[in-house]
Image 1 (cartoon, rainbow, N blue to C red):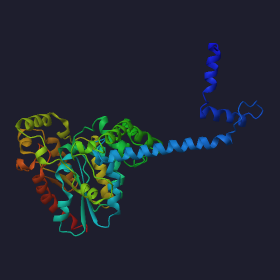
Image 2 (image 1 turned 120 degrees about the vertical axis):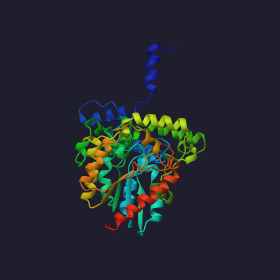
Image 3 (image 1 turned 90 degrees about the vertical axis):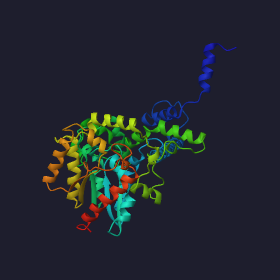
Image 4 (image 1 turned 180 degrees about the vertical axis):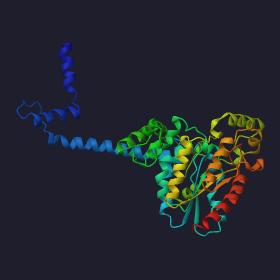
Length: 400
């Protein structure tokens, strides 16, 4: 039997050196030609193995990135899948030969706008209406899209301008996930016209180069990998399908169903929404105490961002309508005196500057047009289609 020391040496000798160790040894003969050689391999002989290893890593990264992008796009990793389609949406609109109307805003516009209905009722031929509203949107969060929005050269843009548009909150760190997803398609270098408006700590969520984009992409690996395992086990079943249609965007990009979803977003049927007096009362109590619907007439970041986007569009020759959709009558009834003062003051400021501001906030609409105090039912969308559609048609008379 061999002594323990000899046994260890034999074990160590049987273990082949790593590729990196072999490359290091081979490189030594290049850096120190007079040094005694302890390897029969040269750097040239190792290059094929090193190249094969590099190619393998790049293929794995490429496949991983493709799968991550796919699961982000279909809503199975992050439910608000529209984030991952904004760059493609702006590109699709820019390439269109028709006249284009883009609607942006929060979940209120997302739930209230049916672009296909607007297409059908328009008095103008060859006009397409695109609902690019995003749930949880604030003007500040829309800033990184400003240049893409302008470069899509829409004939008219409808900007949501309700009380929530002018609240002074800019969301949580979780809301910056949208910027990280947008960074997978775009690169930001700090020279953008809106860059100075960003809170300094927020700039880290926008990729400056390909390496940062790769880092952002790979940060979704655990969730995307889990989704892959799920689909393999359950024969293709996706979490996006499991959670309903609210967060799901059809793929592949550019198909007829994808285009339709950019006009009229997939949503859960009204009957599947939580309803009942108790649910409504709890919702109203939360709204009255939540700053998201309490507008401020100060020069806060949302106000500055809103004005910057508006100015950028107008400077590019785009007509802009400011539109505040209706609110549930119970929300209006139960709001305390003075609750709307900041919003009314802000609206007056824009009107004094000559902006077209259509305020339907205080229009009393039937409760059946809402699925909750701020979001719209199918009948609510029909009303907005007629109301906003007529306003858009009138505005386009001076554009087309």
